[in-house]
Image (cartoon, rainbow, N blue to C red; front, side):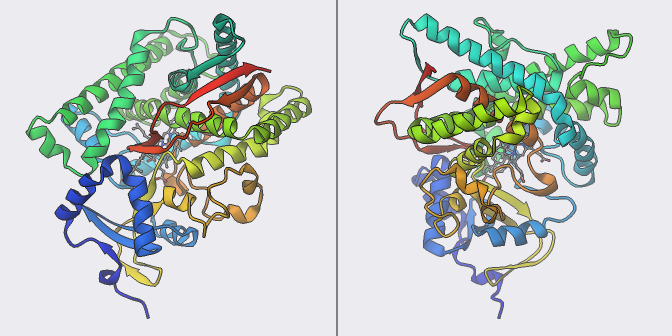
Length: 469
Ligand code: HEM
Ligand code: 2DC
């Protein structure tokens, strides 16, 4: 017989007490480890309430399949109130990230064609390839300047710039110039604002921002300052393209970028376009750069694997005769490496949906409207889901049975990551160029763990050494 909702194990009776305990465990930074521990304590399903935020948590791929089947026509994630509160406070429109219902769907359908459809890859690849080549040239220059034939550094700032340059070149069809020695201080400020925005969001997951705003809390003020910086810089970029479009005469044959395409298409209001393009620009920095940093770290830890990937890339280069679009179809192990990175170091600790219909999971009844979370970090490290989960094995993704509801780093279905195609392509191109040019090494005793600052980040600097081949 199916057991009732009220019998699901877990701590969900007293949200305030649980919030206090959560805070004592430094839960704001340890959310992923706490979730993993809860699955160990309660089993593959548990219910919890922290503060005012209630959810049912699941971990099994087959339960994920049930969850996503019940997401309905207008899939809805956990509402990040800090983000909606800022927009309400400043009277700005929600973009596709924060919209829901019919409005979300109408916008998303149009954006899909310009941002995530496979057809756009032929437009994106040359732009992203240029940025990749410039990154490599920059590293070569750093190596020469060092006078030691190598460059040892924390690459995170360089990767932030690479990611922002990449996403901007696709969105605006032009370069910001972040691979140069002297960069626009406004662009650097944009990068810093994104980091601050994420960091200040996590405490506000559990304490309502409206309350923090009323008491004038620093975390709310910092959050507003961060988003203000993000919107100001994005507005500048958008205005610039808008002005160019109005001055332009004859139709150009060159791909003009996502923003100009959306403006010319004229199917979304300018305000809607601006809101979503700002989110794309902000969503495109820390996500891909941190995933690339973790990948370089794993390749440094596994030198033999690194050589295997290098050989795959070399063979793909020969077979495709330098056609990058074709080359991207010949690097399954590089793609496996990126999936493996997202398994062990997912950007998002969980995927969530408010389910649109009643479902039965692990023989418990869960009513429509419940927030159900798939513990992505916990699933990636579960030995019942992945054979020897502690091992970094890109080749496991070459087997089809590994695929069933296990490769979920970008989410699933119509509400999945809109930037997925840009992110994947940008990361693949980056790894191709790095593997073709440098050996990646790390210090002997470097052990890095994740910490939660809304997205999962390395808990200490990852110092790597790049040596020319
Ligand atoms: C949503 C992951 C890069 C823009 C999401 C979601 C995940 C995710 C898990 C939620 C999906 C769901 O609920 O099913 C990632 C990862 C990235 C990445 C792992 C890189 C490694 C990017 C980039 C952009 C971006 C580069 C922008 C160019 C967005 C947007 C949404 C989203 C706009 C909201 C989509 C919607 O609500 O309809 N991402 N992301 N992401 N991401 Fe990404
Ligand atoms: C954080 O408990 C943990 O892709 C919470 O590019 C549940 C939750 C809800 C929404 C998730 C968030 C988590 C992690 C970061 C995500 C976000 C949805 C989109 C966002 C996964 C798992 C991200 C990083 C976007 C950010 C876009 C930008 C404009 C802020």
